Length: 167
Image 1 (cartoon, rainbow, N blue to C red):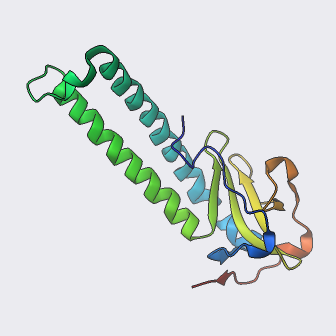
Image 2: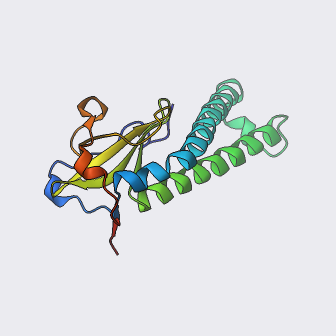
């Protein structure tokens, strides 16, 4: 039910070629948890509504066919409102996800509330992984891995330091 590109993340095959816009520390990523706890349910709500709008548009198309697009059709205004809502929700969702990606944050799964932050551990680019309901960012996995590959972030990587920004 998620829009294209939201159902699963595209993972690079060569971790040496990963060039995220920002590398987060586990501590800095943890500071974003509160904001993400608020944002992810909103994004999920938009996706759910997109599914409902899609179903209604499909129902109209199946029942009326192309006739529903005629200006004098009884359901023309309904279809126009649904088309506008679809466009608005799609745009808002894309803008929100793009803004997060620009910051080096990848939304992996809206259903579970899983988010990955690009980080660095022992010279390798990794994902610091957080899931809704967890109090802190405590796990990581390789960028070529997934949630099932999560491991605890070593204590040495929890020390505060500034994230690197990339132009």
